[in-house]
Length: 129
Image 1: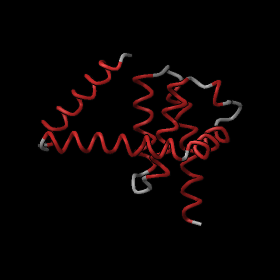
Image 2: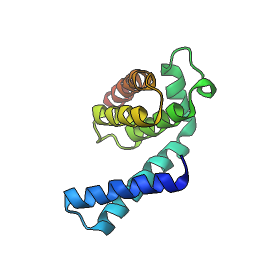
Image 3: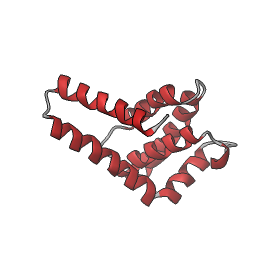
């Protein structure tokens, strides 16, 4: 998908949020952009740690053998689990599954769900210890 298509989808989502949520357009734009940049930053800054989590929980899968969409979707979700612990694990995983259903293969949602659930439990156990 081209950059312009992605931008159009994002614009639609932002307009929808402003329309139904009653938020001023500038607030919606700032929130969407800020949150996306925050997830991206955590994913890049903690890339080795995130990839290690994914590889250790994706049994019999190396990162380079995973579909690029799946690999990067899991990176973003793990970044959110690590960087935004106030967001419930179930919400992060559900959002990742929904995005996988849209952008990846039908089998990906189940794979991503299993890997992220396992990672999420480990992260939560580590923060409670």
